[in-house]
Length: 315
Image 1 (cartoon, helix red, strand yellow):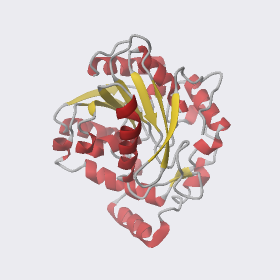
Image 2 (image 1 turned 135 degrees about the horizontal axis):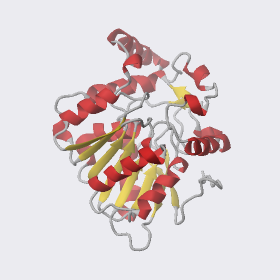
Image 3 (image 1 turned 30 degrees about the horizontal axis):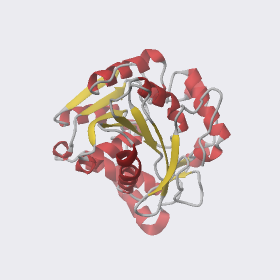
């Protein structure tokens, strides 16, 4: 599927769009851009969050290239222009988060290593950040440093699933209900959400652009997660809570916590920052979940931290 080119969100020049296949036959949409002339600082690999697309990150690509980096990005299986895993394209589904590691490996072997200049840095948001952190030694020796914005390491307290409900969920999945929507979620997802009520960004222009992308390409919008996806996510949270996780991280990590985030657990991110041996931790007060989509008063704080953490980075 070609990239969507909108007047308010043009495709950055020099894009190379490519569909690649994973080891289990899933087709993934990827894109890469060379560094701007004079840029020799390596490549930033972007790993989006749940229900995010390449188009949503065009302005991030531009900011990274202005810093001297080449950029590569992949859409996870089951979203964007990548292969859907059920007959209903609105379902956010996966049987195991370990399957996302196959996406990383295909992206690394078929796009990053052969076509992008080293050194390599990973920039993961939300679900993408949780997947990268759970990958541990699997990422070595490719990525020199990891920047994770609002990584999905747990759910907010109000949505945390008690033990008995988690056991019931896993029982339902084993009985074949994994591809079904979470009860009630599809109906709520179909209800239009105003800018004022959205939990993702306080920037009305960025919100408008992202909604325009979804309006032009309805296939991109996931309606809701499935029982299987939620069950798989809880298993990833258990893995991330393991006491030996810190020993498995191959590279320095910067965790970026958004102070007004209601989508993922801020406490889980703080706890992880204490557990890791070599982290940088940044808390941006007032920012909502998607810091790279936020108003400049918040986004500028993120980019300042990024520049300080990634060697050679400056705009």
